[in-house]
Image (cartoon, rainbow, N blue to C red; front, side):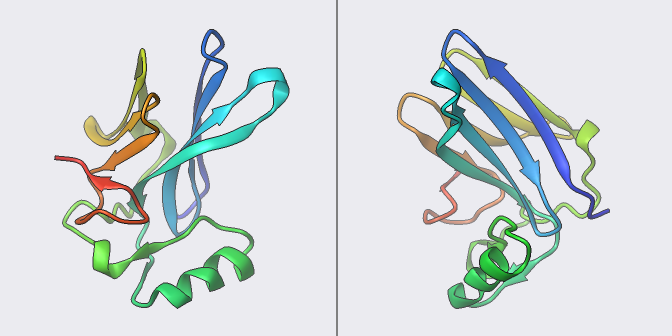
Length: 137
């Protein structure tokens, strides 16, 4: 299943939206500032790969710039046993938002924690700190 995925939740008191978006390569969450219809991404977090892994960071640009603007696929150096979910569908995704902490659950398991105060993302789908965030313990 490689269809596009989309889930969102709004908090109008905080003027923020959390958007979970998946393409054929990967699934990411974005915190968006919706103040005055600004719609600016404040920060993001990697949730999982849908099967696409790249071995060289130079390959990532090819996917972003030349493959219809898709989000970055996962660099294989960051892969762990939770990184790839091939059969993900929208109904598997739940956004749990309490105060300044947003949790993204996949099939009931916490895959991403986003701290709105520090603008840090903690992902179950990565093995080490880096461009994809911080591993979720």
